[in-house]
Length: 266
Image 1: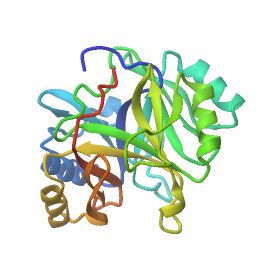
Image 2: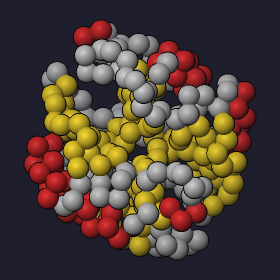
Image 3: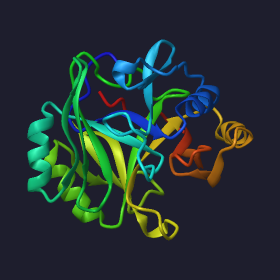
Image 4: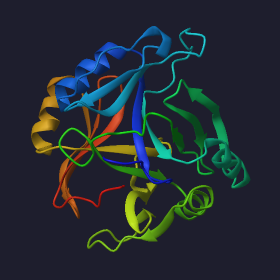
């Protein structure tokens, strides 16, 4: 990535976990990242790197005062959408029927963030860049390649995201992807959306992070050896071969070897 992400484009993902060091060990081994627990003044937040570029964040689950939440929140990957103004987007969120989970806050000089819930119940972050744009590498082994919303009401979700950011939902034209929706920014597909009809009972609406890997089967096997759970074993689909995994602390993510590279998001 050589420039800022256009508003509406997924620009970052991070993971909140009870055991930060264990998560760092797992993902660094699996994807070839480099990462360590960050400084105390940043709450220990870890920015993981690949080839010297930031690819994802990992943080310990804690309250703003540094105490441990009780009960602990679920271990999840959060997708962040780029925006020129977090505050303006938050107003649009509430006007469009969403809710604010974490109010806008400055993160030193690197940016301004918030976390919201869309009207269908999926949680997503917002990122207004300062000195930090977001992921510095995408669409190659070990890096983010796709972000996908799974929701019980695609029509309501499509209307919401189109109202709060310059996102244009459109039916996918990919063969074998009937019923799938692409979120487009500036005419480029930057994310996707699917109905959660096929999800197991009890799975909540959510945004899922996909990481590019050179071999889904090899990464799936390595993840299992490291204590991960296979939620959907490696399978072939319209755009490549993929698997859905859960790390040893329960954080779900997807890995994919695409048959072709998606359009660059920015």
